[in-house]
Amino acid sequence: MKVMGVSGSPIYDSNTDRALKVALEATGLETEFIKLVEYKITPCRACIGCVDTNTCVNTNDDGIFLAKKAKEADALIIACYTPYSSIDSLTKAFIERLYPLRHKHGFMAGKPGGAIVTCAIPAANKALPPAGDMAINAIMFYMMEEGMNFVGAVKILGNVPCIKCGYGNECKTSGIKMIYGNEATVQSVGVNKFEEQLDAFDAARELGKRIAGALKVKI
Ligand SMILES: Cc1cc2nc3c(=O)[nH]c(=O)nc-3n(C[C@H](O)[C@H](O)[C@H](O)COP(=O)(O)O)c2cc1C
Image (cartoon, rainbow, N blue to C red):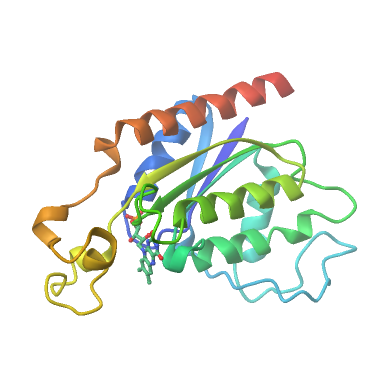
C-alpha cells in the first residue's frame, strides 16, 4: 500500500509541506512526498488525445510521469496554497493532467483521498473570500468526480507574503492591513506556523489515519 502526497506549495518546507508530511507519516504506510515545483507540469490541453491509451500525448513535461505515479498509488493526498482564493497553478495543472486516468477505466476510482490547504485569510473573516473552502472544494470535487473516497480535509492558517516582503507595514496594498485591519502590523500579526495550530495538527494526523483506515477496508 502506497500513499502519494503532492504539494503545490513552491516554498520549501512550507506550512503546506510540513502538514502533508505529518498526514503521510500518520498513515503508517509507505508514502511518497512529491514537490510539484521540482517538476515541469503544464495544464491539460483538452485535446482528448488520451482517450484510447489513458496516457497524455504531451511528452514535453512531467505530466505523464506524475499521472503514472498517481495511477500506481493506492491513495492520494493533495496539498496546496491559495493564491487569489483558489488552488495554486501547479496543483491545478497536476489535477488536470490526471484526466487521462479517467477514460473507460476510472483508474482513480475507489482510492481514498484527502486535501490539505494553507490560506492566509482566517476562516472567521467573512468580509474576504473563503480561500480555504474554495481550495478544499476544488480538490474534493476532483476526487468526487473521479469516484474517489474523499476522507477529509485540513485547513491551515498561513502567512500573507507581506509578512516577509519588507514593506508590510507601509505598503498601501499590504495584505496585512487588508486581512487584519489598518492598525495591524507585521509585528502584531506575527508568523503563523502549522505546528502551533493544534486543531490543524490533529486534523493532519487524523487525515492520515483515515486514509490508512479506508485502505484497510478496501483490502
Ligand atoms: C500571489 C499570492 C496571492 C495570494 N492570495 C491569497 C488569497 O487570495 N487568499 C489567501 O488566503 N492567501 C493568499 N495568499 C497567501 C498564501 O495562501 C500563503 O502565502 C500561504 O500561507 C502559503 O502557504 P505555505 O506557507 O505553505 O507556502 C497569496 C499568496 C501569494 C504568493
